Image 1 (cartoon, rainbow, N blue to C red):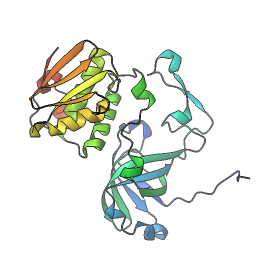
Image 2 (image 1 turned 180 degrees about the vertical axis):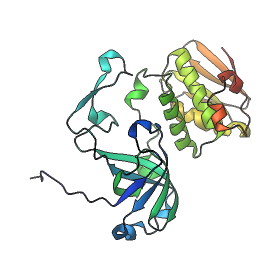
Image 3 (image 1 turned 90 degrees about the horizontal axis):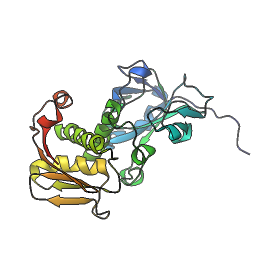
Image 4 (image 1 turned 135 degrees about the horizontal axis):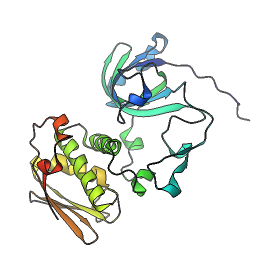
Length: 271
């Protein structure tokens, strides 16, 4: 018979510039994990990993509710069970986040991004495994339905997903995320819709953008949704519609600027 209760021992604590969960950006921020002295031996050679899983305990989370209303979904799908969500509301408020390990200084792990607020207890750390944990073909409810396509939160999710696939946050990640959101909103189509195809350019100066577009559309050669071209232009195809896109993003553009300028400053768009 399974035990009715379990004993958890915190192994460390998060030090973050964000102390209020309501102010935490969707993608998280750079933070520090202080591992308690009695668990430091467990950090031996952890720096050999580029990414780690961090499990935290949200002590003040609501542990009673099993269903929530999500207004961003269409009315018939707004009530959802917590086991199909990433909400902090759950019977056992265990938080799970994969993050980049930036540096190790003694018992301190510098990571980014991490969406745990300041003072969150850490209950475990383990390595992220590309072979076991990365599933490119995976889909969530947000990929299956038209969910809040124009929101800033959705754009932040696109940036994070593209950065994780591409390996760094660069101007093309920001610009490509905005392009995907523009297509999605304009055509009212999900980025990973099985009918949405994308033609990317193999030009060296556009290889970063090609990564972003493949990451966010989930397009592959095997699915028939991904094509390549030696031309400067890229293209989106959906049903009877085609959008030709010529990139205009300067390589040294400031990331904050790319998030605010008109989309026409980043791309020439012709439908």
